[in-house]
Amino acid sequence: MNVEGKKEVESENSSRLIGVKNFFLLLIHYRTSFAGLIIVVGITIIAIFAPFIAPKHYAEIDVSNRLQPPSLSHLFGTDALGRDVFSRVVYGAQIALWVGMIVVLIEAAIGIPLGIIAGYYNGKIDKIISALSDLVWSFPPVVLALGVVTVLGAGITQVVIAIALTSWCAFTRVTRAKVQSLVNREFILAARAIGESDFSIMFRYLLPNVASSNLVLATLTLPAAILSTTALSFLGFGVQPPTPDWGAILSEGANQLVIAPWIATFPGIFIVITALSFNLLGDGLRDLLDPKLKI
Amino acid sequence: MPGMLRYAIKKVLIGIPVILFVSLSIFFLMQAMPGDPIEIIAGERATPQRIEELKRSWGLDQPIYIQYFYWLSHVMVGDFGISITTRLPIAPLIWSMLPYTLALTLTALVLSYVLGIPIGVMAALKRGTSLDNITVGIATFFYSMPTYWLGLMLMLTFGLYLKLFPLSGTDSMVLPALTLTLPYVAMSARIVRTEMLDVLTEDYVRTAWAKGLPSRNVILKHALRNALIPLTVMFFLDLPWIIGGAVIVESVFAWPGTGILLYKSIIRQDYPVVLAIVLIIAILTVVCNIVGDIISAVLDPRIRVEKGD
Image (cartoon, rainbow over all chains, first blue to last red):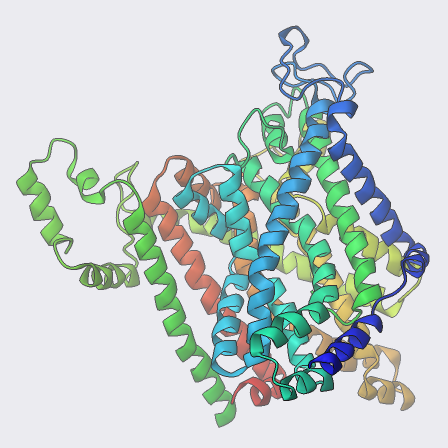
């Protein structure tokens, strides 16, 4: 019954889908983005194989080797408890990527449906959703997250909730704008004409068409999520010791900055490299999939 | 211009329920917090009668919605209640630290625009060249950097090794301001570049070139002016964000502003202070939003027509 509508959707998608091979050829053309991708893959491998890469367990205390500067046996030196900073930073990659991904998924799960509803219905519903997302958007996320942490208490779960609740609006904005540009296109009108329900139009016809923009946005949101969550861990409200979150290691290092600057230096370098690689990859994906997207 | 005025009044009128909504949420958060402020004010040895008396004088024996209006009327005249840990009024505490935060954040914000605009324009004019690529690369680099780490590294380099500035405290604002500024320079340079690239391809700019106007005129008068509209609005939207960012920078450099007060109050679980600061920043955010909207409408008349109906 809705064969025609479906075909429209498919052609709509296929015009944007590029073959996997071409995709990589294009990505090579965008050299910096390709470098970003390589580093992203590298960090992911470090995270997955952390137990094999790290010479020591992240919580292994060695009091006889406290505050050792970087050397061959301790690449990034040791901290105040004699723990190997390199091992902690390697395990930290797991936490950064996990936390970042979960934050982005929650943001997308809140933001995309709201954006589709706002863009599809227009009128009052749109105004309310847009006003809410504008309001949350303009509020400084760290302050809002600190407010949430004050209510819910410190801990990584609370931090993930806090950051996600304060940063979903970008997904709503992007999705809403995209849906507004699609809602009067023939394939949607056709779907309406054959009696598809609003729900079906929104989530079976519109959702696939906002996927590529949101993929770009997700790639660019992940570094922001990692920066925010590690910032809260740095302040002491996120991941609790001895779990080796990069922000938490940095925070310990800040106390020993003068006598053992390496403790704070290395996790910071890893945060920068990770955030930078996702940003470079995201910029490239944007040029490729949705050049007009402004974030 | 009546259209403009009507738009402005409308924006302000929309802002009022938003502020009420925000204040209501914060009021209920405060109710949900553990600890009874009255018992703290009265002290541990207060008799039940004394507590009753105090409750009545603070309006706490009234139904909750009356309590809300009571609280709101206090907040509106700048009375945020009493800190749990110091038992002193909150408002003077905040006002005494606010100048430090404002000095830091406004310096950073202004500096980031002063540096970011020429960098962004230059990159846009040299689009695709290595100068452009390097600029974008450096901007993305600073954009990807956690401010607290940047702060620590600046502290290490310029404070500890080069001994140019003190490590922390109020003697010098250079390092904290620089820490807060650099990521924003990167951000504003990126925005200016994108906006300039958009504007430079517009017909009226092409016409201006075609007319043979000197390129200085075309770039500064025709292109930059329009490219700066979104940036003017950004200034107001960025202000609350940069105050949020100051929380981290202030706690890294022990800069005695409201940010460090917020941080310490959360650690001490001094909820009234936390919520007072969050409320002030929330109101500031809404006000900045309204001002940004109005200014963008003044600068770009099309906005009034599109959104003003």
